[in-house]
Amino acid sequence: MMEQNIMNRFRIMYLVGLILLFISIFLEWYSFQMYNFENTLVASWSYYFFIGWYTPLSSDIPVNIFMKPESSIIPFILHVILIGFILAAGYVILFKNIDTAKNIHTYNKCAYINLFLVLLIGFYVIVCPIIYLAPNELYFPFLSIRDYDLEYFYVYSLGSGYILQLISFPLTFPYSIFYYKTINSFIQQERAPEKLIEQKIQNSQEFLDLDKYIAEEELQQQKNISIPKDNEINKILTTSIERRK
Image (tube, rainbow, N blue to C red; front, side, top):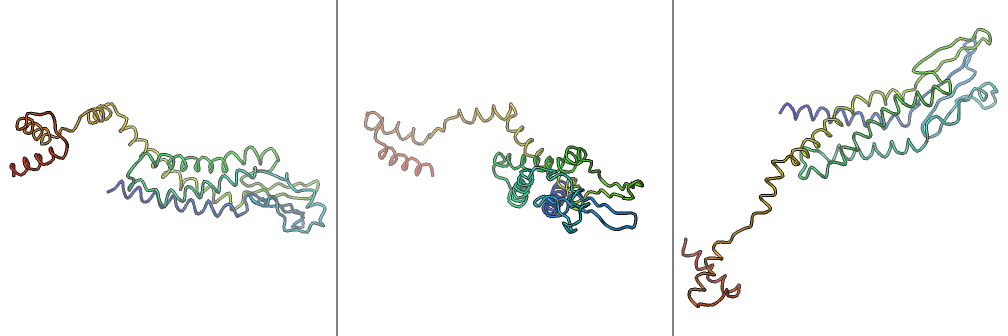
């Protein structure tokens, strides 16, 4: 009972993590602002997965155009893959509950879907800032720099989309590991030597229809002929069974 309660909690956490992860796709993932010492915003850029770098300022501001970061941070195909695995994991959490599984082998792929999604989230929250932000001098998680020579200060920060991804990682991790270990333990038990030997013994055993053999023997004794047709055997078989009642 306790294990079942823990499993249900993990499932709820996982579902919440999936929802937050899906919402994060449409929110700001990274932002950069530039102010003068009079606290006037002169450059502002935010990164979204599907539109790239976006600025709320007018395109007539030269400084803003000049300070635009690199056109791409993360390959677009990664966002498509992320959405695909979110939808697949949503199907698994709703319709592939291992507590009601009749054939555990069919759930093996579901376990890998959950694991790969967790790895993908880890890639976004750990690897992406290192390999995409740092080389372009986009600092993280938050940094404010003052340039007294040019009289500007810069603000670098990870956005709300990244924060939701960061939250979704510990929410999805426990259920993914529990799901995988449960399926893997069942498969290992079925592959145990004792289990394999038992299955081979059961497969090698032949079903002996004793009543049919007795009917054949009685018919041979009565008519002194070889084994008759099946319909005659069935008649004697019926008679033999009725005698036993």
